[in-house]
Amino acid sequence: MNDMVLQGGLVLTPSGSQAADVAISEGKVVAVGEGLEGEQVFDCRGAWVGPGFVDLHTHLREPGQEWKEDIDSGSAAAAAGGYTAVVAMPNTDPPIDSGHLARYVTDRGRGVGLVEVASAGCVTMNRSGERLAHLDELWDAGVRMFSDDGDVVADAGLMRRALEYAGQRGGVIAQHAVDAGLAAGGYMNEGPVSSLLGMYAIPSAAEDIVIARDLALVELTGARYHVQHVATARGVELIAAAKERGLPVTAEVTPHHLAFDDGAVAGTDPAFKMMPPLRSTVDVAAIREGLRSGVIDVVATDHAPHASHEKDVPFEEAPFGVIGLEWAGAIVNEMVDLDPVTFFERMSVTPAAIAGFADHGRWVEPGAPANLAVFDPAEAWAVSMAVSRSQNAPYLERPMRGSVRFTVFGGVPTARDRAPLAGVR
Image (cartoon, rainbow, N blue to C red; front, side, top):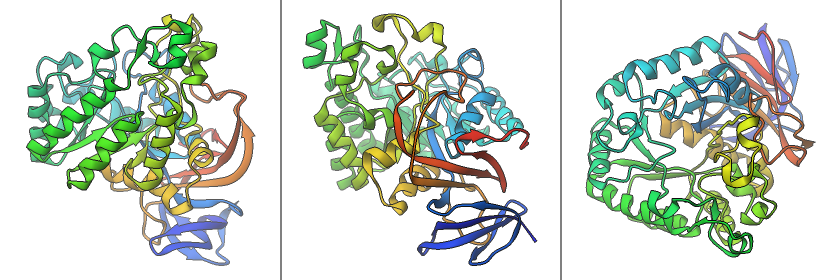
């Protein structure tokens, strides 16, 4: 008897989608077909059964800022959102600039056991932008993505050396593409809304300039380069042109940049304060189309928890950031309306390939690891409270379309109906 059967869903297989059951035993998919039996049977009628979501951009805040989030609570939020693997950003305290710190993060994730947690490593020591981090140590510790996320690598010479290092080994440099000088003192997008509010603002050129410079460095080095949280129409154009030239460039967009434009900031709710800031309606339309077309390769949450006492302050004083692991699938489903294959490509298959997750992002077939998400594209619901330790989200009480019905990690159900299952590990 199989351990588990996911019954009656639309299954995403290597040869396309089909209505079928999925049987799971000993952590693997063992059969895809009709009339399968198992000790546990889960009703998946009306839902898509595909590879578990993979997030390239998650802030788990551990070590050093556990009052916002830790690997336990962040893993639970990820499982609730359909994720089976995440890349934890290195802007922790201390930053992940050495091998032993990266091992700490991955070991903690393995101990929690709800998702696979990989650690990104800093590009520069202490994320200060002055000298390269211990890249060899980080590589030996399993790090394959390097980023100073939260800060741009501003020095072009330093960025070139980082790209050359990554290029020699097959890793990827991920850039927080926001020019620090142009963004200094700004709180939101520069445009009519910021003028109306009389608020210091950040021009879209702050992103575009960094992307353009870095693409020139990619052309020079031939190294893999990933643009984090693309939010401008010009950024999409630059990435499209680079891909047409055959450069090894990938890009991500966040759920919040897909869902909202800078008009949402008019009420000065700090839940809408993020970096890069929410951009114009033209920019939002461009990034949605970029995701549809594949110019933007993946959805990444930039899940950035902050405690209530930090965020419940005047807009100008609040930190940048919003949580997103638990409803990313719903936002993408509602705002971009992708077909099932493209949906799982953007949420699962391509991010797993970029990060090098061998056991994730694989279409459902016998022999594949049972790391799966069951997503109902039609279910309507509303967010009442986040699983995350922090609640800084502009989605609370907002109607959603599309829901994670089940998450399976290593052949074990870890979440049901957007809630983590107690005692699964």
